[in-house]
Length: 326
Ligand code: PMV
Image 1 (cartoon, rainbow, N blue to C red):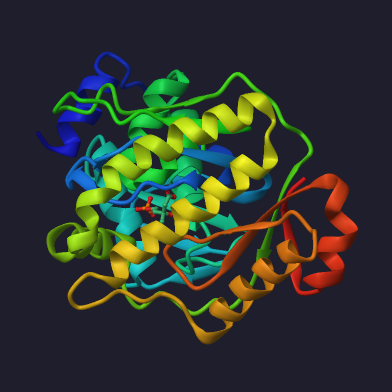
Image 2 (tube, protein in one colour):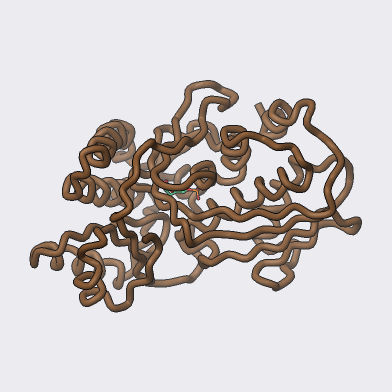
């Protein structure tokens, strides 16, 4: 099955006339239990479920209109060449939605650096699909938008909602049961901060990194079982508001994901010396009684999980922190 078949099925009977412009915003999300590995690369179908926290104040804003002379893609006001990786990837995604040979003018502003492992593709594709929905007036439901966003980037399916969000692994070949949904619980005192180590483009994209890990890392065999355990632990910790249990599991899950990639051949090592330094700072802070935990995605930057009541102590220890959530 191809992406275009999924789009056709979801948009059956919905193709209408375009409005002059469609505009939308979508937040970034950070996985507390990671998605790492696809069972279907074409449709971005995952091997495991995953669970994230949405960053309500960080993300992408996208405006789309039709234009006659090919695609014109602007990122933060700058027109990108058509062979720019971001523009190219977006144009291939937009191909799924063209009704004829029209082009699109897309203007995207992102409050996170692109391709540095800071969830920029998640908010970018979620905002794009919502902007297309507004442009064409489809009025799709969240589940359908989540599936369409997944076709752009897996983690984008979680960027349709606020709060804690679970992406269900699903089992169907067409992926119609692989979408995200919000959990019915709130924990407003949870905070996420971000320690910037580098904004350089990552040496290996997450698609290639996942493939290589799955195909060559001996440690990957244990990953699905670890995710099943971690997901259950994280959900239990969230519903009991047990922060230590949450933080310990979140950090262990992220480190295990990186361990699977380091054991791939050739190894995938996103960490820089400062990444390791920050991880040690986090462990030191804990030894001295500050309840903070780290998580990391496909890049060298570290995100820090803590509670509102520890805000001052966290800022004192991590003066370079930027706030992502709360
Ligand atoms: O959605 P992608 O292809 O950018 O992959 C995201 C992978 C991680 O950020 C490392 C984990 C996750 O669940 O977001």
